[in-house]
Image 1: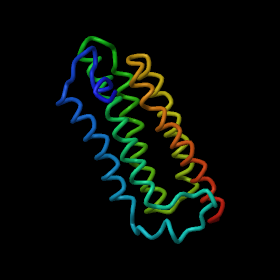
Image 2: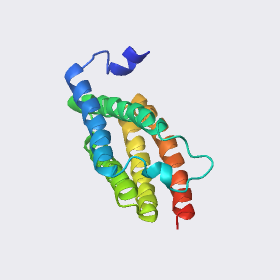
Image 3: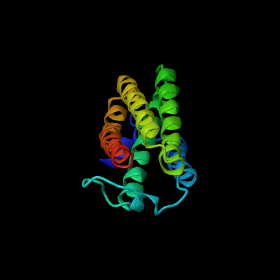
Length: 166
């Protein structure tokens, strides 16, 4: 199954695949580095009852960035095969940039309200990216759905933390 997801029109493009995944994962790693002024901060703030333990987040985000990278790879390959993918990849880059900024606003700056509104904007761009990806490659669109679900949950969690820490 995984091998089929990595094939676009029956071919694997290993260099593009690796580059797409590494780029997505680097966004997560670097933003968490800049965002985490103090790892114990998450434990110290008031959190809602449905807040997962801190160790869950890096696992989930690693998987989500992997899926994003594979989705972007599939769209990129379609573009090199003549598909019009510019809009898709521009939206993807914008949502990656917004994703990069959120941990800095939330963890380093501790601006929970601003982080919530930034997350709403991020969610809009993720949904737009997903629709554009799906137009180019149906599998790429489907690979973005767990990301949407997680960001919706993260938004609810962010909002609750904002309210509980006013």
